[in-house]
Length: 250
Image 1 (cartoon, rainbow, N blue to C red):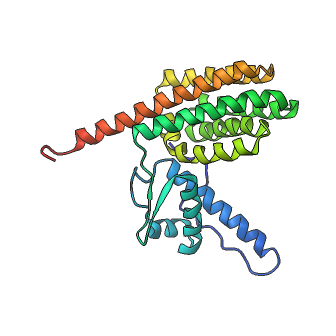
Image 2: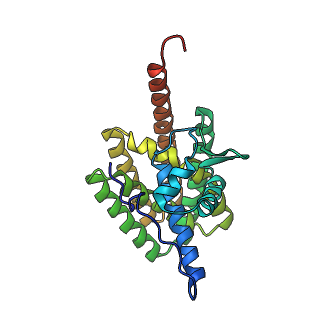
Image 3: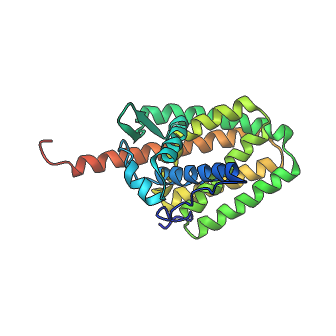
């Protein structure tokens, strides 16, 4: 499926010297990080695979210094692992890792939903509604990239509306570690499960509009548990495919 982001092969313009150089440098760093994160999340490098620094530098049209700065951020987010003097590789998660991470995420989002209903503004609900309907449009057009981006923004908006910085920071830490597998599980998701996920998001929006904290908390917990099942199923399918492809006696 064609990504909605700019082509990874399009070179990024280096910042010009002079006034505004610092702002341009920050903007450049952000663009590199965004494109590199999407490249990893969307499965362009296999699980456990080494990050091809030279190839990425050529595709992005940048030197290794800004690339490695971006890789440090992705490592802090849990998407990749930095190997001492050996570059970096995509972090590989086991079934047990997924079970534990999604259970924690389910608890965090459940708490966020309860707290958000106590303090969310009408304007914030309206913004989440807009994201929801944009996401629904992507769902109708089978645009996984757009769907995933809106989906993440909705969940992050609910967490932000909880008005709890500790929760927000903790959530961001765990969300980064499972972002790639959430995308992969969504992409491999059967049509029926995708429709179920959309219905769950309808219920999330409805409870949020009514500021029904306890109800929203339960819906979000169940929603993340369903994502957990989809991610584990996807991991198992990938393992089966690897075993089937392996030569006899290996």
